[in-house]
Image 1 (spheres, rainbow, N blue to C red):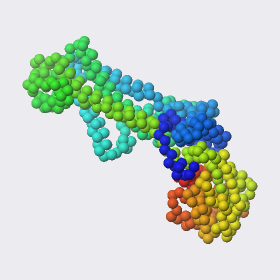
Image 2 (image 1 turned 90 degrees about the vertical axis):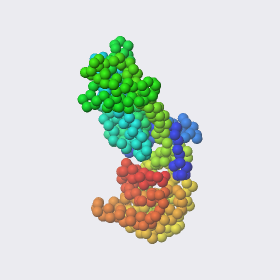
Image 3 (image 1 turned 45 degrees about the vertical axis):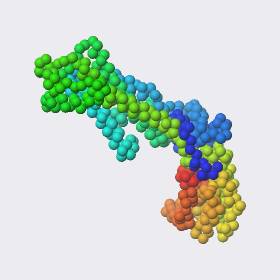
Image 4 (image 1 turned 180 degrees about the vertical axis):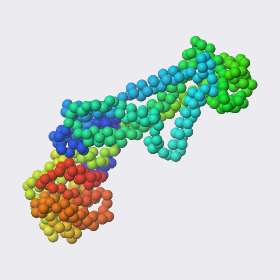
Length: 505
């Protein structure tokens, strides 16, 4: 499959569990460079089994998700700690239900807005509830108008606490019982946090909105339930407000309730008559209770439910779109093997006859990067001075990249090695081109002099940079990768090649 075809694969069909499993397997296969936990045979088996299970023509998300599910089932018997972490990161819906239920009970328990059987019309809990929710709406409105993302705002203590519960819904194992390296755990949690952050934001918003609505419902329900058994008396008191100011405050505060019920507030004189300390100083609180309840419904319950429903819609949509693009090198290699079969790699040495040990190292390295079933063909070396006489294999069919192989022992020259790279780049056309410089001949001829080695590497980088200056993004692979094919550091070399090929394979 051509690079443009692989990079354009977009599939929104992967759900949350599949995305988590795919992220976990990616952490394993990326970090486990030594193949101790997940071998080359395991990787080939999982790809082949997934391809057989989904059949031909399946979307990228379906194939990647099925492969991850099969792999995690095999890993379950090898490293219970790893699978336990994955299971722990999966969202448990009951957590949101529990938070909302606690909010309802809290509202019922905190319904006391006065002393004994009196309702203080200016009680801080009611004013605070209304003011808090109006403040939340203003913050949401300002954020929408200023087009700032919700994740960019500082989270309060409650949001941080619930966010921690949402982000890691299950209990992670305290004692590891398997070979899982700490690096895999760190990579998994870091990658999943980044992938699922938009989903967690919508999920947290849904929980908080519905919890706020249920808290208000609980407060009102508690008042009415107790009102059947006892008589609430309405009164008010204030150190700073007189009857006129209190009437103005209540007029503004209870306006939504007046609008909903069609009732009316008593005048200033009637309000002054029920002030604490006056006589009789109270009256039956039923009319006031209805106005308070209606106001809470209009200001808190209905808007919060609407916001909660909208957040639930966003959450559901995001839960199905966690992984929609698969144009990173890791996924592209998997998909290339699924759609186009084993990668066809062509290695063209320049003025260098690699020894069998170097060819074996090259086979191992490229197998790690492109898959164990990659077909690798090494052509006859291009002789010094024959830069324009490229073999026919230098004009690929688009199935895989071209690989230019040099010896570090050779002194780089723009007219020779540089001209060879330029000719290969022209012949490769849209196919990726990777430049490998084998350090094995250098170490065989020279003493281990770190400064001299660094100087030779710099010379190679400088010459190739001059040749590739102004190259398009698809040719970023022309930056040389230095490897010792006779004594490979597989993890380091694989990481270096993947970073060079990022976005170009």
